Amino acid sequence: MLKIGDKEFSSRLLSGTGKFRDKNDIKKMLEKSGSQIITIALRRVNLENPQDNVLNYIPKHITLLPNTSGARNADEAVRIANIAREAGCGDFIKIEVIHDAKYLMPDNEETIKATRILAKDGFTVLPYIMPDIVTCKKLEDAGASVVMPLGSPIGSNAGLQTKSILEMIIENSNIPVIIDAGIGLPSQAASAMEIGADAVLINTAIATASNPALAGEAFSWAIKAGRIAYLSKLQEQSQYANASSPLTGFLNL
Amino acid sequence: MIKIKLNNKDKDIEDSSSISALIELLELNPHSIVTEVNLNIIQKDKREDYILNDGDRVEIITFLGGG
Image (tube, rainbow over all chains, first blue to last red; front, side, top):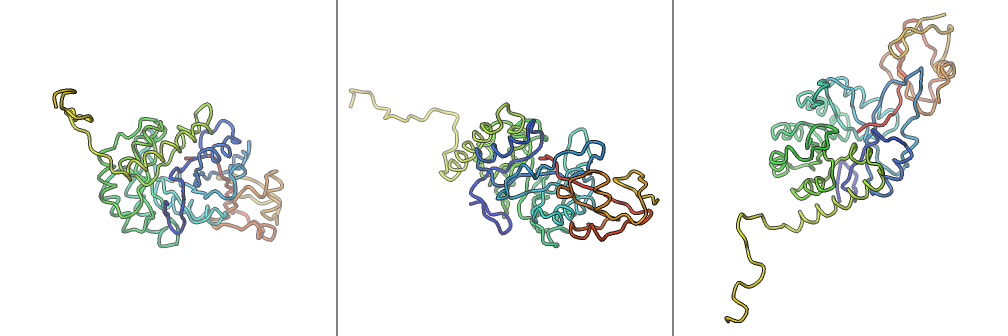
C-alpha cells in the first residue's frame, strides 16, 4: 500500500485533470486505471466565459490533489493551498512554484518555504521539485509527506532524463518518492517503478491519448509490473553473456 | 453604486449588494465557485449576509483541469 499522510492507497498511479479534450473521459480514465488520487488546479473564474468546474467530473471517492500552479513564490502557493482547503478539497496539496515560463522548472527554494508553512498548518504536502538530493532532505525536515521530483520537463513525454539522480533520491529518502512530470510511455513509468519509486504522477500522456481510459489502463499495468519487478530484486545487467543452459556439449558428458 | 475590484477588474454594483447578489448578477453557479473578499475566504453559507463595501477586492475562483 502507498501511504501518504494518514491515507493509504492501493494504486500507485496518480493522475491529473489537465488537457482532457472531453472532461467526461476523466471518470472513464479513473475507472480503467484504478487511480485513486487526481490533481486539479484553481483559477479565477473567467467572467466573460465561465467554464465548467472540473470537480463535477470527479467521483466523490477519489482523493483530490489540488496543485498550486500559477504560484510564483511561496506566499502565493500558501494562499492557493488555503483556498483549496477552505473550498472543501481536503488537506492534500501539491506544491508547484514556477516562475520560468520557458522551461517550467520548479523553484525548489520557494517550494521548501511553502512546505514548511503548510505542513505546520496541518496540510499533507506533496512538493513538486527539480530532482536534488539536498532539497529532498530539506523537504523531509520541513514536514513534506512525499517528494515529487520530475523525470523530465512538464508535458515533454521525454521519460526519465533525470534517472541517475532519481535513483540516489530514492535510496536516500525516508518518505515516499513519486516521480512527477515528463513520463510519456507506460514503459517509462515501469522503469520509474523498477528503480524503486513509490508511485508516479501521469497527466499529459494519459489525457492527450486518443483513448485516455485505455492509456490509463496501460499505465496502471506498467506501474504494477514495475513495482513487482522492484520487489523481486532483479539481477543487474552485465556486459558479457551468461549462459542460461549448461555449457557442456550435448553428448560430451 | 459602489466600485469593487472583481477578479482584478473594476466593477460597479448596487449599494448593499451581498456576495450572493453579485453571484446572481454574474449568472454563476454558486456551488462551483470559491469567493474571497480582501483575501479572506467567505464560506458558502455566509455569502447571503456578507454585504460588499466600496473598494472591496473580490475574487471568484473555480477548479479547472491541471496536472
